Image 1 (cartoon, rainbow, N blue to C red):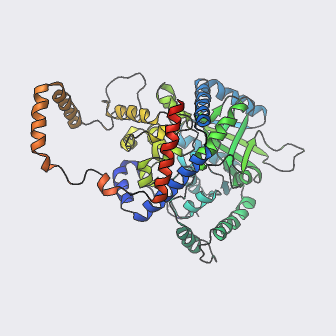
Image 2: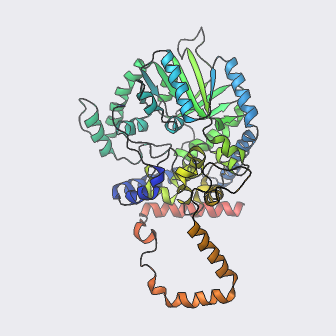
Image 3: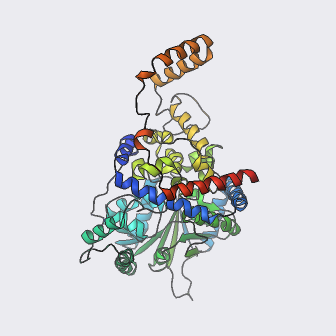
Length: 485
């Protein structure tokens, strides 16, 4: 499986990627239907605006409290995990994390890793790293397995294969899995994938998972999932490696409950997921299953840069629900691959500059209409538009300008011509005489303006009747929320 070439989209070519995505009618139709469905599911999951508002405020308070004590909580988490028999590893960079994981696998002479869903493993490009060293890493989440089989990257942080139709998957399985007949029956396709993966669990030397919440007071790793693959990855192989960013730590076990409710309802409109795994250590002597060895890798990879700045620290509140993507008019039209980053959409636009630097992501903070939908639906109230404006400012700030907390790649989008244009704009609007002259000229030269205004007239997709109903419901719900506030 690792032999199949990966289709890579670079964040440096975001504008070209976006143009290609906008020209793909099939992609845009799939995304429009999927996003409308997910928005409706979230709306139904929060029928009481007052409850939603209170829960969001509670979630925000928990995340901010935990982040304010992050260094101490990380040390407490390490202490508790070690006491529970879990080895803890610290990785400053993506490459260091990959090296640590490979060393753990190599120590057992492992050749096959079966993986639960982990966006951080995508962030460090773990599959590619291991493949180059003779270790096969197989995704066990069905959506991740589909995009891995197709040689693609996930297009959504919750539903990686949301851009694919059942016909796409039927063709993929028929071509890539030996002796697999072509069928578009969804249940049959799921069973085909599960039959292949079932044997992988039994053959794997190592299981790897992500972490949704790491509880400092108890040394517990919480894993949220629907398919049961996460539980298989963390119990069947003798070695379990958990991988997570340093921001996922929470102070108390009771903090998990409201965050879990916000996560599942915001992501897929479910009150709870089918499985909620709590891992506190390896198999004990009197237990019949579970890994004999558990390791946790804590990754920084630019997160401490965001943490150092009081305003940008709010980026780390994210619980990875994907709601901001589902409601974003830009993401809905171009999908995740166009961003060329592990985390696409609004959350990717504010976190990727810290992970990759502004040199590689300078176009992402401007890939937004600033409509505010992302901030309004964020379950932990991250002010995403505010973060985008700040990152735009940093990308334009001259590299030699001293600031308290400089960002990697500061000034990557700085343009002398643009600076002069804004100076001219300021001068024009500061002088009544110049402004009157400009108004006089503009009214007489308006015939020179282009007939198509940017992307709107070319790329607007009319709402379907079902989508119109959804948006009417959204407006009604927001009106009720405003009355309460």
